[in-house]
Image (cartoon, rainbow, N blue to C red; front, side):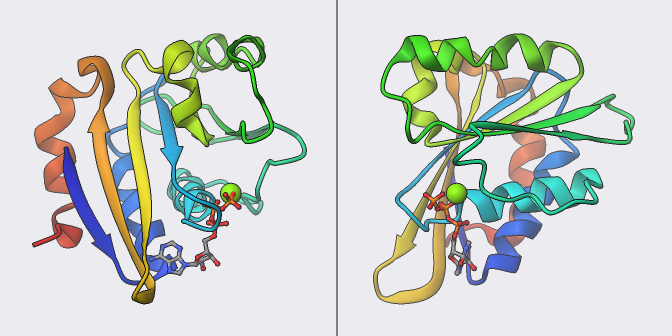
Length: 167
Ligand SMILES: Nc1ncnc2c1ncn2[C@@H]1O[C@H](COP(=O)(O)OP(=O)(O)OP(=O)(O)O)[C@@H](O)[C@H]1O
Ligand SMILES: [Mg+2]
């Protein structure tokens, strides 16, 4: 696990954008953290780095939003952004079919994603965001690869987030 600190929403977007160069089709990122922690902000950073030209907004009422992406070297063609706050059952999460959707050139970001670990966790990147109770603009981001899925990229990930390492 690596822990980073960002001191503004923009910094969280930049950090998220740095991770995009590591992403390949099929990746799932599970975002966790309380209301207002910065899960959507992180997702906006991913969208921006992928060149999504429409606003990446909270998908709360739609569950999953799809954004088409101009494929880069890794061949990512779709960004899927999900918010599973309102889903209570693993079956409902499985029914979203995110695992299948990403297989066709997609990467998925899942807000409240920790609940999806049993069905989507295999190989996922977990990003847990924590607000600093003493400093409004500060967030701690804990990054970890579940089930070793990111182990072969871990050195590159650590390097990509160097500017935000927590000391
Ligand atoms: N360092 C930071 N990183 C991310 N967001 C920050 C930071 N500092 C302040 N903010 C602000 O915190 C808020 C985060 O809201 P955001 O919608 O991203 O949270 P969320 O985790 O998606 O919430 P929800 O659970 O309601 O979906 C934004 O208003 C953002 O500008
Ligand atoms: Mg959100």
